[in-house]
Image 1 (cartoon, rainbow, N blue to C red):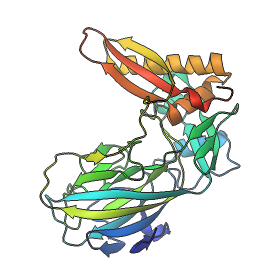
Image 2 (image 1 turned 180 degrees about the vertical axis):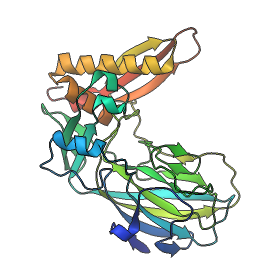
Image 3 (image 1 turned 135 degrees about the vertical axis):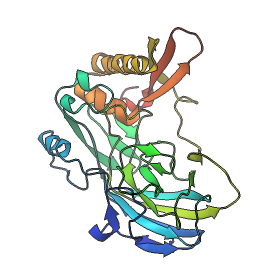
Image 4 (image 1 turned 90 degrees about the vertical axis):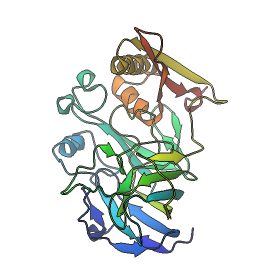
Length: 315
């Protein structure tokens, strides 16, 4: 796709914090198309030869996500909205799903997995290859994208905030548009942390992390008022015409219900599809979607975990 600007992933175009003080690497006009080269979440520290031992070194590094940018949008000012039209994604044929040692207390179930896990994915066009013949359909999206916050200082890339950031919304695929409230002059837009696929919930703390080239159109809107990010998307959504297998979690606490649904899915994948529990946890993060089924029948709420049956061989 033809672009007006191309931002490479050279060191001088990468930052690992959000800040209104980052110098823009390029100034663009509203409606310009920009192509960003994005490093994966590990900052290129994993490769095809990596093993689970390499995950320990990732856990020891507190550096934030590598983000490409920021790009200044001419005439943008606080109170405006930046529409980010996601046009195209190109992966590089490899991706990584991993989780940290349980002592790091990251992910949904660190108490269940004391040792780290890793799967190196072969990405073949629109399919990611897992173990035991399992094939996961790819639906690339950026996990971390946003504009600079108005607050002074440097801010972590890990939590999402009202100006975007680490949203991890799997539905921000090509054809989607994200709307972001602008808090600083020129907006200062950055993007990174791309995922080739991810389940809703990203339960083990990673999707299929992958370096990508992402093309977007950035457009200013002055007559729209939103408090936090909003978006338009065509999915992909779990369910629809596809046959799913789901496990439920029932509890008077939504987080506890979420953990139960995920644990039951891990057991199903382990017992019915011959995956180790580590492999099952990694696969859940890449493809299993969590849904809140009801929050009205107190005292208990229902969360379910859905996996598409089409990913399994001999289905």
